[in-house]
Each structure stands twice: as C-alpha cells, then as structure tokens.
Length: 366
Ligand SMILES: [Zn+2]
Ligand SMILES: [Zn+2]
Image (tube, rainbow, N blue to C red; front, side, top):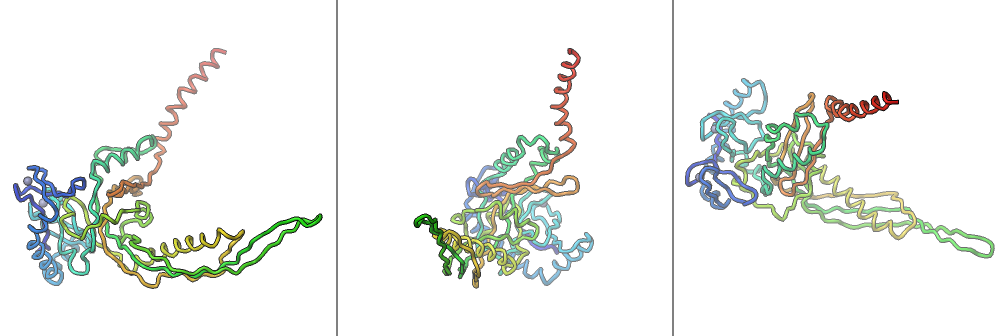
C-alpha cells in the first residue's frame, strides 16, 4: 500500500487549496474562498497526525516494500510511491520530496510523514512573490539577450517555473579569533641636509569573539551551493513556525545533507567574515599590517532547520542544464545562460548584411 499524502481541500467546495504569498492565505481557485493558515491547520490537525503515524508504520511495513518494488520496476533507487487522494493515481517521487502536485489531476499534495520527528523543520519562510512575479522577473532577465536560444525564451517553457521550498540549515554560533600581525609605522622628516625615514616595527595582536545568527547553508544535494548562496539574503524576521499548510501549490524537499555536513560551509563563511572584521580593526592605524599567525574557529554552533522559498527553472540545452533561481521572498535572482552560435550568426549577418550592401553600392558608384 502506498504511503499517505494529504490534499488540502476547500471546506466550502472541496476544490484544491493553494498557499498564496501575496495574501499569506490558502485560496480556492474554484469558489474564491480563502482561509488563514491557522484555520486550515486546525481543520487538518487530526488528519495529519494519522498520516504521520501511517508514514512511520509504512517505513517498516508494506509501503516501504511496495516502494522498493516500484523502484525496482523503475530501475531507479530511492523512489517513493504515493497515491493521490483526489484521483487515485500513483505518484512516483524521489526520496526527498515532501510536497508536489499530482501530474494527472493537478492537485497540490503534501506528504506529512516526510516531516515526522527529527525531520520536522523548525521554521518555514512563506513565499511572498507569486508565479506572475517570477515569470516577469525571468522575462526581464532574458530581455535584450538577443543571442539566447529559443529553448529558453519559449513561453510554454517559462510557464514551467516552479516554486520550491528548499531545505536550509541556519547556524547560530560564536567565532573566537586570535590573530597576530607584523605591522609598521613610517615617519619621514628632514634633519639638516638629510631626509630621514624612520620605520617602527610592531608586534600586534587582536583577539575577540564574534556572534553569528542564522548563517544559511542549503541542505539539498541537488541545489548548487554557489547558486543558493547568491540569492541570499533572506529576511529571517518573517520566519514562521513550521506548518505544512504553507506548502500546497509548491514543491518541497526535505534535507539530504545533514546539519553536521552543512556546518562546514557555514563555519568557513563565519571564520572568513571574522578574519576580515578583525583585520579591519588592525589595518587602519598602521602603514602595513601583515598577519603572521591566526587561530580562528567556531567551536560550537546550533543548527535550525528551515524551508526557504525559491522560484526555479531548469533549461536543457545542448546536453547541459542551465538554472535560473529567484529568492521567493525578495526577488533577488541569478541565472546562467549560454550563447547560441546559430543565433549569433543570424544576428551578426542581420547587421553585417546591410552594411556590406552599402559598401558595395559606394564602390559601384565610384
Ligand atoms: Zn472552494
Ligand atoms: Zn491526482
């Protein structure tokens, strides 16, 4: 038997509910009703508990076996199979999927059992920018890039942009820094007919602590780290205690990079920021200031688990995948793009053609 999933349905008409960022509410496309997250949470509390419990049983029992059988049939590892409560279709999801939509009936589905126990996020940062805003930002990003292959700019493809709740670890910690520098001060003066330059050497030491809060590092193997770093910062004052009621209508993944693994990146970032800060306090008062030894470390930290909103579009072109990502809260975006040589030539000749014609005409007249 497949594991249980939940479809959030409109209490008025049973139509599918979507979380809408601009209103911060769950809205029904069919009858226009809207509900607060708290109202829907209250309504679904019992159902989710049952689903979570079923999920736990399923891990050891038949569902796990069924999933294994399916993954065997699919020839791929780590697939899970769920049955859509609306249309009964079987959904194949990868191991980390926690929210998706049914490809057959389109209804948003959430897998509450994915968030059981240790795997329950502490926070969720709800989407603020909707799909319209994401599509507009993407089109604007493409604007003026005449050399872009059509695979990117095709309207049907652009419509495939998806809102994803990406699992992130947020680290709090204290960096201790102890850095020694060889520094100099230079003085220059004239004495009689001599010009004298006097250099004083100093053994400088700076030590202290720096507190960091919520250094983010994504907890998803499939998300490229530099890309996730580039769409920062997120405004964490808008974090909400986690609830699955923020997920319908979006994709959501659970982490597959542990807090321990992700902490390496966070610690490195915190330490490098600390070094820059400490260097700045020493450098200003000396003519030169060169670090000779440093001990910088974040010995302890605390990790919080949060789902953060990202709009994403992957484009396959010439056997390569190009990603576009946009911060679903602030709109900050990043994308990598190729240049199609085919279109480059078309563009080049578009300009070069008339110019050559004019030149030919002048030559002819002479
Ligand atoms: Zn409705
Ligand atoms: Zn369905």
